[in-house]
Image (cartoon, rainbow, N blue to C red; front, side, top):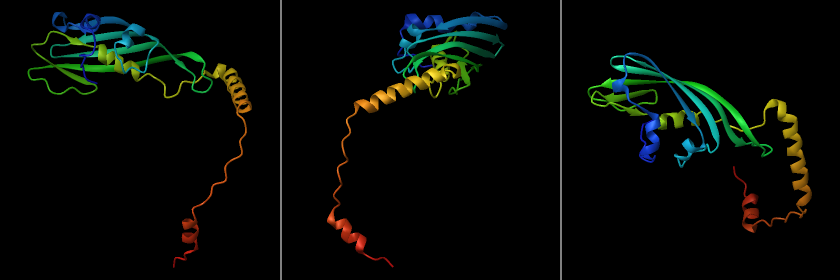
Length: 187
C-alpha cells in the first residue's frame, strides 16, 4: 500500500492528512467516516455504497509513529445468490508503523518511511485500501435470512426455466478424418 494520491482532489485529502510535526510525543486520537463521497474519489473502487467509521489511535514517538486503526460499519452490495441488495457488516483492525528517517526507503504494506524534513503524510489511500480488504469474498444473505434467499432463488430459477423454450440439441456431425484417426492402432 503506497501513499500515492495523485488521482484525488487536493481539497478532499486534507481531511486525511496527519500533520505529525506539530504532535507531541504520546497518544493522539482521530475519527474518520468513510462514505460514498470518499469511495467515489477512487475510480477503480469496488465499493460504491458504504458507511465505515474509522477510529485511529496514533502513538507519537521521537523517530516513529504507531497508527492503530479500528474499522466498523457496513458495505452495501448485492447477494450473489438471490440478487437482493443488502448491508454487509464489516469490522477490522490494522496497524501501520511510520518511521522518520534521514533518507527514507521504499514503503511496505505495514511500514511507511517519511523524511525528517516532512511535516505531514496522507492516509486517504491507506484507508481506502484497508476498507477494500474488508470486502467479503462473496456477498450472501445472513444466516437468519437464508430461507428467504433460498425461496427467492428457487422462485427465480423456476421462472427462468419455464420461460426458456426447449429446443432439441443439434446432433453434432463428426469430421470423417477423426473417424479414420480413431481406427489407427497404436502399439
